[in-house]
Length: 288
Image (cartoon, rainbow, N blue to C red; front, side, top):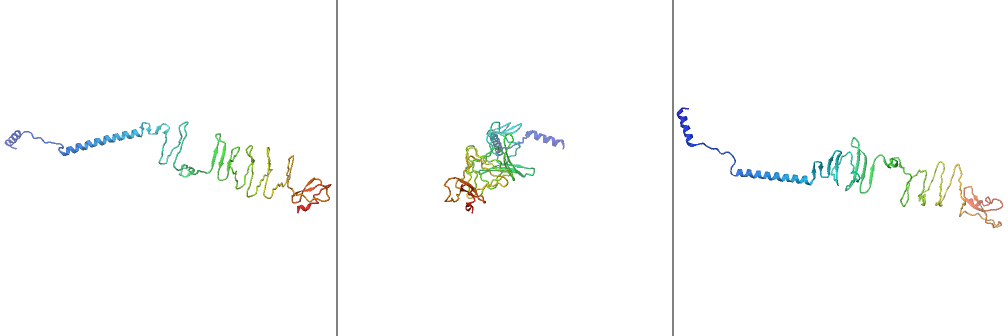
């Protein structure tokens, strides 16, 4: 550029003065920006207040939340707790000296699973009944003695005494095997079969003993005492056989009231008026 033109342009710029260019947001844009910044600050404050309120209501602390506390041994719940989904835990226990309650509006079910998630044992407590599903059910005392056991083959009662408090007694649809059947002190023992027969069998013997009372055996048709290889012993101070049939008396016989006990070949017993010799053969007509 020629020196004359450069000197002329410099003279013109110096005469006009320095030019200023404005940079920024002005007008309604500036007001909108301030409004959004103010709204964002309000939302931040509201969010912070809600967070503090939730922390206060839920009782968040450094040890846990609400009734839930995190300890070295696991989780600790204080007060009532509600679980909306399944709970998986290795051990559940209450505080020392306090009971442990399981409460549900319907059923409380406890399942024991194997490695293939197959149910091995199930305990269901419902409004109608308590059900236990397992291969074997056992009840033991504190010392480890078996009190009750049940499985598919048998039911075992290991207590020293089995008491039945039902007013109608105990019903056995099939046979019962026991070494001893006795009643409580000052209570009567009754073995009864209302519609069928009552059979008592033992390989070595049957003993019926009433130490402080009477013993009574009644039946509808026949009462049979049978011993195949031994004998039947009636040991008592007085043996009474009332209502035995009386054989016909001879018109010429004495009027003494002394009778002898006779037995027919079929086992029937009857009374015959005693004489100088046996009169059982004379009155064999009662055996027919």
